Image (cartoon, helix red, strand yellow):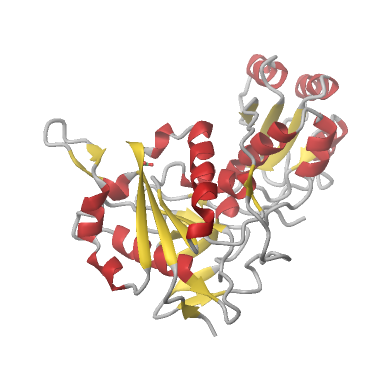
Length: 348
Ligand code: ASP
């Protein structure tokens, strides 16, 4: 049986985003407002029989301004308050929510409690806001325990429009509608209807519930993204793949991992491989996976030293690289580890 934990304590972390914005009468743009006003807008939170504390980031940000330093602050905050709370809900802008959720999933090691990101498409003060339902569902999920008193979802997730998605599988796929997020390569971990239905076959549970949380705070951000497109020039490809500042390049390829088969392109990829750069192939498609053995063009990439990202999202690929490269200077180790499923981010 799944029950709400009456004695739970939840930490609500407010970082900014549309959910907490209101219109500035001077220039009619949306700007973040104070957290106490969010609580005024959602009196439903007071109906939960457990403790909800709030922490407000300063300054509040539009999530377009998120940087790796922000993830480090967020991860450290969770670590420092970890023993006091049963779960964490992070109010965050939608634009980079999938990046932040992916990053936290790799940064938090030994997680046994829920870390649930949510936000909204419409500010919470608007009559048709989606923020209230998203917030209330996120809090309920963050506090839910199983029959043994363990967290129902001890993972980093995104709760949005009645769906609970694994954070490092999610992507923002709609700029206008309430169902802003999808995790195309894995079904939702839970759906909120009259009750919240958890899919316990998909949720990852720790082998040891007494694990201590540790945080990876060394992030190496020397990553570029090369999106293949018709008409891309050798100069652009060279600049990105051979740039002295990049240690890794995520190559966003067509379909199941195909790129340009022309000699000039493969030559540049080969040169980058010879420079020991980490070259990771992810697909531009929303769903599906890279399989470099399927077509001749994919095979050429593989031979030139490109490794498969399987069904990784670009957001997750970036976060995984930041964390793994932060852990080690050894590119061979990073390449090997990239191919492993660490936090449910790939299906090999
Ligand atoms: N620009 C906003 C943000 O990401 C959009 C949103 O929250 O939906 O902070």
